[in-house]
View 1 (cartoon, helix red, strand yellow):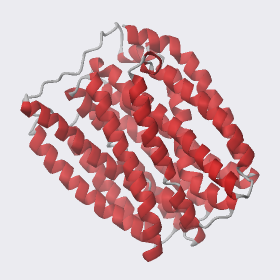
View 2 (cartoon, helix red, strand yellow):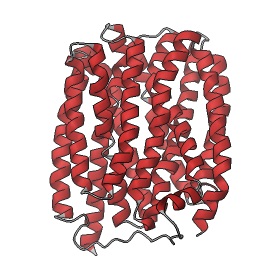
View 3 (tube, one colour):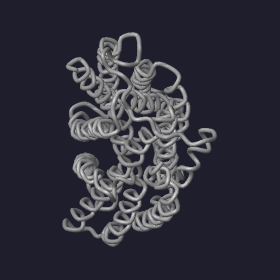
View 4 (cartoon, one colour):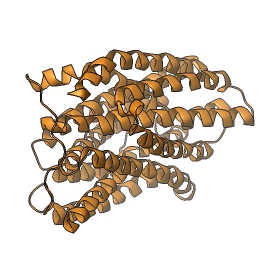
Amino acid sequence: MEIKKYSNKAIVAMCTIAYFASYFSRKTFAVVMVNMMQDGAVDRGVAGIVGTALFVFYGAGQLVSGYLGDKLSPKYLMFSGLMISAACNLLLPIVPSQYLMIPVWALNGFAQALLWPPIVRILSDNLSHEKYVTANLIVTCGAHVSTIVLYLYAPLCIKWWSYKAVFFSSTLFCLVAGAIFLLAMGVVLGKGEKPEGVSKIAPRAELVEGSVWQVLKGSGILHICVCIAVMGFMRDGIESWLPTLYSEAFGRDSSESILVSVALPIFSIISIFLVRIIHKGRVFNNEVRGAGILFAISAVLCVPFACLVTVENTAARVICLILAGLVSACMHSSNFLLISCLPGRFAGTGKSATVGGLCNACTYVGAAVSMYGIALVSEHFGWRPTVISWIAILALGVIFACLAFKKYTSFLKK
């Protein structure tokens, strides 16, 4: 019993460390993008394409990673992802042309995709659904803490050295974290994929007749994928472009813009803990219903955001920052429901990594659209129309959550 308890905690800890490093090396470009544009290292259009390339290849890679995560050793997939990401962070600031940044960061997107589906498999194979959800909370919070550390570290790094040092630091961090992860998981898991003394205890769902595709279709996954894409658009769109929005709309310098963005992950961590608590209740225990409610709340919050985004005074600036934090928090909460909790419902099919990969792929379809789309709309129309467009996108999420609700509820009852 003690071996089992110790092993489970070690698995969660190692997955958290790996995901912490993954987020740190994934968000470096987005965090220093303002400085790179100001230094002339990259222009706005190319910056949007670079960010889009990461999201596109991350999303496509999720499908590959999800399939491989159910077939191959997840620990080696995760280690490979961290090593490739380290190399990409090393290369991006030293490539001779801004256009070469696009394939480098696209490769980083694919490398990042090798993390989440294997994590889903490792956790769902060794934990009950309740403990699986708790473990996901810990791993997800590790990612947000990583974002906070990056937002605090980047301005200091830029002030003392340059934005290039942020990428080089990320390279070193990934190398160290990857080595620790592989060695520790080798001790805990040994040659197999389950720690000694731990059996596969995730509950088996009652399987329905038909192919895996029929099972997924019967769960309302097609409509859910649209909801996830909406969540990805809003979550990564706000995180990637808030420093630029804050700098341009309110005339603030880039270092302040990056620093104030640390509010986003703080809001997100608090919201995820809250949604984890209410996930045990009747309303949010249904992940689709919970996400639909969060989309609706976010749409309402974007109305005053759109009204105040170009008002140049301190009060408007602070209120917009709070509203952005609240919308980001709602999106991260819906991400917790749809990406962390929902795939665990499919553990009994033996396809939890596949479903986790599919869901995460849809997240980054939305993220890819947001990275380039927000750049395009903000450049041609300004930030107020951009925020107004978010309201329409969130309304789309509410509609598809309603369409998916009946099938998904039926799936949960089986």
